[in-house]
Amino acid sequence: MLGFLPMEPILFTADELRLVADEQFFRDKARIMTKVRGTLNALYTGLKQELRGIGLLAPQGFNPEAHQFVKGEHLEDFPYQYLDYFKHFEGDNKFTFRSLFWWGHHYAFALILEGEGLNQYKKNLVNRYETLADKQLSLCLGGTPWEWKRGEGYTMELTWDRKVDLVALLSNRSFLKLSRFVSFDDPAFRQGRIVDIGRATLREFLPVITP
Image (cartoon, rainbow, N blue to C red; front, side):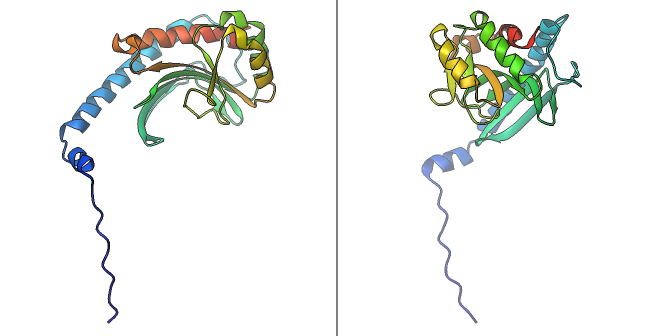
């Protein structure tokens, strides 16, 4: 009979063993994720109020009632939850406002626009720049709308002195994504003001997507 080579043992570090033995962590995680969903539920109600009576420059076939709640474990290995409201994904057209909780990173509120109407959205952003500048909003620079990192190379803050840069960046972009990020060490997060910030962010983005 052929012999079998012994397999090298797979060893755990002391920190890994401690985590494996920690019964409380996943109870804590479940409780936190329940609170996150509660926040997104409240935000959904608030966003509907913000859009009441507002006419949007939406693509054909847009359903103003469409929305979705999504929960997962592997956004670059980290758990996440998000709300899409409003929500329109059809072919190459994207027209949505996403509120994302990303464990270990931040909350992100993002306006994602692609396809039909994109040129008008870009014009609105430039022509109405004074309504968005210096409000801690950012243009996302990634090659895909689904990049959620922030900082150098990923985002450019919309400040008064960056308008010329903005115009140059917009000319070659096949989609438009604007975001606000809230770190977990931000006092607003500790004070439970995420719903208020999400509503305010949508209001600040409206000049881009309204007549």
